[in-house]
Image 1 (spheres, rainbow, N blue to C red):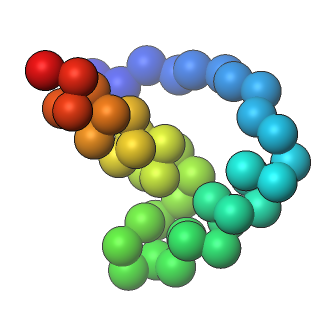
Image 2 (image 1 turned 180 degrees about the horizontal axis):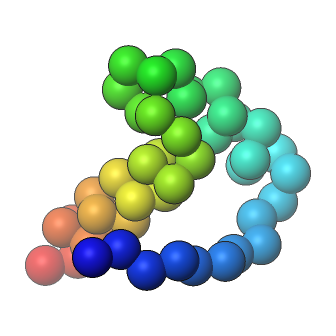
Length: 45
């Protein structure tokens, strides 16, 4: 089950992330953030 999370991010970071949302790899901003956090957590193991 997913839980809603609210964060504040610099405009430039949002702009860069929005460029990567193409509907093929990333569906939306939540998908980008979830993927990035998952990758980061894996590297921290």
